[in-house]
Amino acid sequence: MVKRRLTHRQMSRQKAQQAKRVARAKPFEETVKSTLNQSLGPEQPGVLVAHYGTTLIVENQVGQCFSCSVRQNLGTLVTGDEVIWQQIDDKTGIVVACFERRSTISRPDKRTSKPIVANVDVIVIVCAPVPAPGKTTLDRYLILAQSLQLPALIIINKSDLASTKTHKDLLEQAAVYRQLGYPCLEVSSKTNSGVLALEQALAGKTAVLMGQSGVGKSSLLNALAPHALAQTQSLSALSSRGRQTTSASRLYHLPLGANLIDSPGIHEFSLSHFSKEAIKQGFREFIPYLGHCRFRNCAHINEPGCALQEAVRLGKIAPFRLQSYHIIVGDLDNK
Image (cartoon, rainbow, N blue to C red; front, side, top):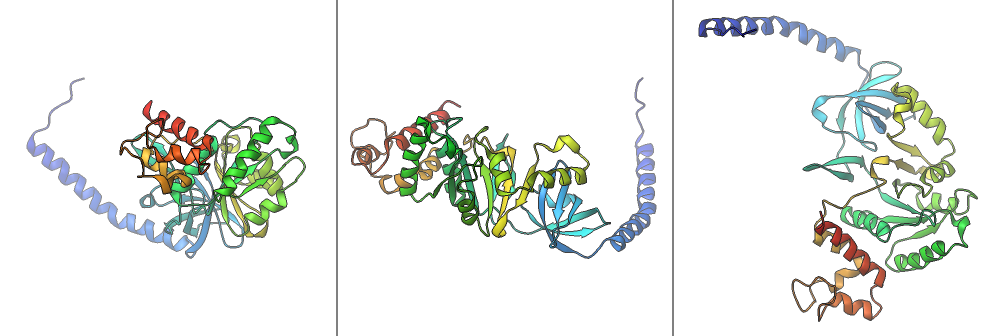
């Protein structure tokens, strides 16, 4: 069917009719807005504790959770955001504002970055003898923490597997990380060994869990917060999303005023959006030696006069850390 072309007079008449309809609708629109505003409760602070697609779960100051929509002009909100919201009924509400974030963890998303969690005070990096961490796994998370100027806490989970060679290797690496100022704790979610020390380390802070699949993050979460499963089921029911909520980010309350965010979106993290300079800065023990190589374009491999290689020879830098740096930078070059 061929679309009929309109004359200029017909198009002008059509625009005029549309303008009249818009003008007639304005009073009705204002009435709807006024009625809606009158039905909303007062503005109050809250925390976004879960995120299921377009549905946000907001917790008020007394621990009650509400399924909320969000005003379109607020942009992307994520778990951990501190917000202003208004209650609609005993189960729902609307988010009308968001406080400025103390910190934001994002991941690369095409040409931009996508926020995942907000207002984190410490990054908890979980590793275990099984599955054994990759050669660069820990360092990649530490680079992220360094770039965000957030402290990192390294957890060696499954300490009940202490007799394995991988566990002994992890302890040797942990000794190096401790010397660099990174606290390390041995924990077993199976025997609850070290769980109390972890609770004390997180007291009063909001932490986010990071680590490769299979290291026991879920078991660790259940050891820290036995109510976590019940809370997850409750939030899932509130969101009306059922089983589809298994990959959602959630904030859990821990003893001693701590919060823990579990977000599957950052368990496997890429540094593809980092520059080589940012990678170097992520190795904090490299910093005193940067700019002191004989050649400005030194790759720190086998060039004469390399300050980093000399620091390794003198025992100032652990060999595995420089090797890790080369692997990470090599991955950037191959992309």
